[in-house]
Amino acid sequence: MTVPFASWLDDSHRDQLKELVNLAMGDGAKALSAVTQCFIQLSVPQVNQVSIQDLNKHCKFVRSDAFCCCVQEYAALGQVGWLFIAIDPKSLATYASLLDRDCVDTEDHENMLVQLAGVLVPVILPRIAKELRVSLKLGEVQPFVGLSELPSVGGNANANTNVNAVNLAFSYAVEAPIKEGELQEGKLPVLMAFDVVMRAPADMVKQLAEKFASRLDILL
Amino acid sequence: MAIPLLICDDSSMARKQVAKSLPPSWEVDITFATNGLEALAAINEGKGEMMFLDLTMPEMDGFEVLENIRKKDLKSVVIVISGDIQPQARDRVMALGALDFIKKPVSTEKLTETLEKFGLL
Image (cartoon, chains in turn red, cyan):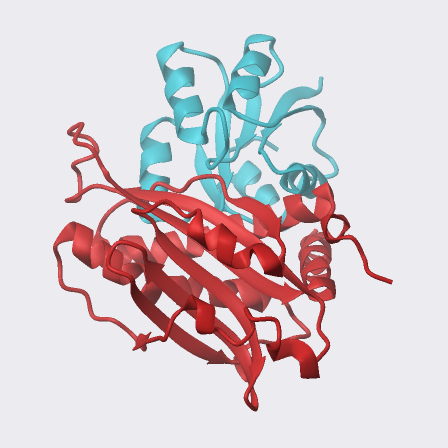
């Protein structure tokens, strides 16, 4: 039986994921602010479901001046892992890196978003370098062929794994001053917007949300 | 007499988590707010003598709440509980009058330690 897509996540799951992304973004912002010496203004994360069929459409709707980053489970061509891809719609430059699944503890799914926060840093750096007119050393960022050629977007990649997948779009924007301290001087900050699409098996996403909530209970 | 305590966070899970983390012996009368505007309204109604405040929220964020408390000279002791762990965020909230900053997720131990440090327990 096919489970209606909209029913895979309820409001509670969405709230839990938003909070989890909020923490991951905080970690990412700390790393970014250390590199740029700028205060990063975080916005409230949005968690939305998009179907695999709508993924390309969703990416097309990304603002023309916004960076788009997709995070997807990669299961094809004998490789399994997480694929991170960023696209600059203006220049059509793409950046991608593969993270081996061994890096992600499937028994501890919050690692997935911790990894997400970590990987966002090299994804975001090129844009920051451009906007702030500074030179930043990039990590392992490699050229990539393009979103439409992603194996898992076409719908065939998971044929051998039979994975039901959820696509979650995390949209957020960050603002940074051109130089440290300029926020106080009333100068307009640089706006950087990101749409993050995460693709993960439906059960894993729900487990992720529930595990995160129960982990907080353990802390009490 | 129970202290009017306000917990302000846009996440339902986060609000519950803070409430569950309160020291069991602490006598408080809890009110919840989901954004800064609700928090200011609650403080005006006398429900926020003490407040645990998130920073990243819709409508009005935690920084703006602190600015409003200062500008309007409202009586509320604020401890920020946030995932925004940039040093600048901490410096900014402290400069705006927050009593302390606690990194999310908060635990009973950390909350108790903080409250004891300021003689609030």
